[in-house]
Structures are given as C-alpha cells and as structure tokens.
Image (cartoon, rainbow, N blue to C red; front, side, top):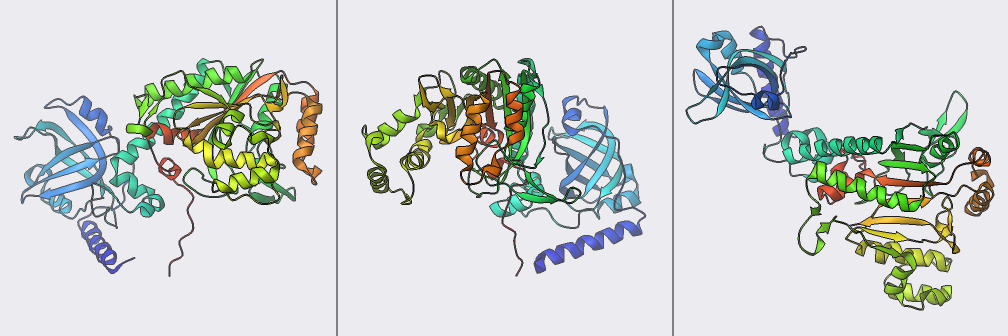
Length: 479
C-alpha cells in the first residue's frame, strides 16, 4: 500500500472513531429498502421511499448537504438539512466519506434546478469504507487493476457493470430458448476419474477418501451421451470446463460452455438451432444484429455461409495442396510464416494452416464443414467419405464459437477411434462410456457453444477477460 493510501486509510479510520464517539455502529445490519431504479420509476413529488447504497458524491453546504447514492441499479440524489435530521445525526453525516454505504428514508421532491431528490429524515450507517474509491469516479483505467480488483471496476465503470448484467441476461435467454425447444437441463460430474470428450490437458487432483487421482472435466460430452442412452432425448448443460493450457485473448483455463444433444437429429438440426439461438440473444439482450463498424463489422442477419474445410485450405494454400507430400506441404507452410515441426504429418500441418492462417480471417458467421475424421473421434463419418466427419465449426470474428456433430453411436467404430487417439496409452480409453454405447444410443446431433466467446462477440469485447468476472491471472508477487 502506498504512503498516500495509508494516509487516506488513517483519515477514514479517524472518521470511523468519530462516528463511534457519536454513538453510531460503523457496520449495520439488514435494511429494508427499495431498489433505486424501482423508486425512480415510480417517482412522484411528495411520495415516500427507503433507499440504500454507496455514497459516490458528497457536497456539504453548511447546514445542508447534497449527496448521490448508488445501489448498482441506479443513482439518486439525497438532501439533508440539520433541522430535519437533528444536530447529532447531521454532525455524524459530516464524518462520512465517499464509498460509505448508508440507508436513508424520506420524501421525494424536485429541486429548483429540476433534479429529483429524496429529502432525508433519517439515515443509517451500514458499512464504513476504509479505502477510497478509484481516483476518477468516471473510470478505473489500469487494465490489470480492473481484472485483479473487479469489485472496483464494477464500482467505477458503469459500462462494465452493464456488460455483466447483459451476460446474465444472455444466459437466462439461452435457458429460456432451450426450454421452449423442449430441452431439459441436467448436471454431470465436474470431478471425473477420466477426463474425456475433448483433446486437452486436464487439471488433476487427489480424492483422499477413495485414494484416487481425479480430473476436473475438460468437457461433459461423454456423460451427456450416457443420458441419451438412458432415454433423455433433448438435454443440455450450462457447465464450467477446465483445461490446463495457455492464457491468451480468447482462452481462460476455466470457462463456461453450453453443451446440448438431441436424439434422432443430426448436424443440420444443430445448424438451424445455433443460428436461431444466437439471433434471439442478439435481438432480445443486445438489441442489434450488427456489431462494430467498418470492414470488421459483424452482421448476423442470415443466411450464414457454409464452406468446406478442404475448400478453405485450397483457397489459401493452392489447389494442389492435398496432393503434396508432407515434406512439400511443410515447406510451403513455412514459406507462409508458420513454424512446423519436422515430425508433423500432412494432417497436422494442414490443421495448423487452418488455425493460424484461415480461421482468423473468417469475420462474418461461417459454418466450416467436413473436417477430417481423425481430428474429431466422437463424430460420425460422412456417408460419402469416411475420412471426413459430418460436423461444422461455427466461426465468428475469427473465433470458433460452436462446434457441432452428427454423433457417432457405433460402439465398435468408437472403440477404434479411441484406440487411435490413445496411441501407446490404452488406459485413456473410457471403457464405461463404450459399455454404455453398447446398450444402444439413438442417432443424435450434438453441439457446444462457448458462452464466454459468444458474449465477447455480441458485446464487442476484445478479450475473454473482459467478459469473465474473475479471469485467471498470473499471481502477483509483491517485492
């Protein structure tokens, strides 16, 4: 803490002691109140109200004081006069600082300047703030401080608070949409003996009671498919996933996903479903189908184009790409600025081209289809070419927002795919899931939607940290 902050804290502690000397407890209990937004909506001169919130502005004018109270739903002016509240109460109010939380009751009136105001008859101290608010009430500008002390960010930057209110509304709208479509919400384990459903490094922990190593889930897919076997035909989970991987503009190790499955459907049903879902959230929560301006503006109005993975590769790397040897493909990729290890085969080189050179260029909503089956072992192969999977990846603003599959329900093919993926470590094969498949899983379509990334897109945010209340950060070591 800086010397300046120590001084401010000492000044506030002195005010706390003055308040105590006047008989006020610095930390009060429950206070029955009305939200400021609701009170403002029903404002009528002469009406009564009980409000509570944080003091964000105080103007002492001798025997009267104006102040602004903010409770997160809105801000309202209050007015105190010494004769109205009493000498001791007024003297105590003069010991308050911005940031203190109080409750007030009184009557509405309009000032000579036309501002709606509450004339306070009684007030109660609910919490004394020992540290000052950010220097500029109109904004906390230090980006790292905003993430580390999100509570200050929410106090200082109303647009940040509004964004997280919209995020909450977005999740509520998604749930409502899926309920209307006949989907049931379920919960599956976050602690798993074997992390499956995606290719990612898990976080591992030890379960003392059973003396076993457990993993935080990387995806809920295999448990949700067990529920398809069990007879639930439309189900979804809004879940937290954990992947022990990098931190960057679009990745956080703990993130929110929507994952859903519909029996007797396929990837084409998922395509119509995700388009309808995103348009509904854009319309009802964000109020627009156009995000941003100029060449990078995203326009959500359908139709959204569909293009195959191989066509995108050929457009970027040449019509002969898939006839090249791995060595020739490696040299061409390196000529395009990619770092390609010598041991990579043609498939890995191709996917690096897609992820590093192509995906980021897809600004408008685009369904990328028919990816290699080897990349997606849980998806059903295309009927006309088993080397390709019957899938799409929805990409918006250069980010994968929603992968979707026609699900593989053949337990024998699924075992083969798992064994190929496991390589030299057959213990990674989830035998319990394969057993479930052998009881018969109906044909199905499945999809995941990255909630954090979708919120980024619709809110026009530049980094995933902007839409996560408490993003993961490197620990700060005080020197």
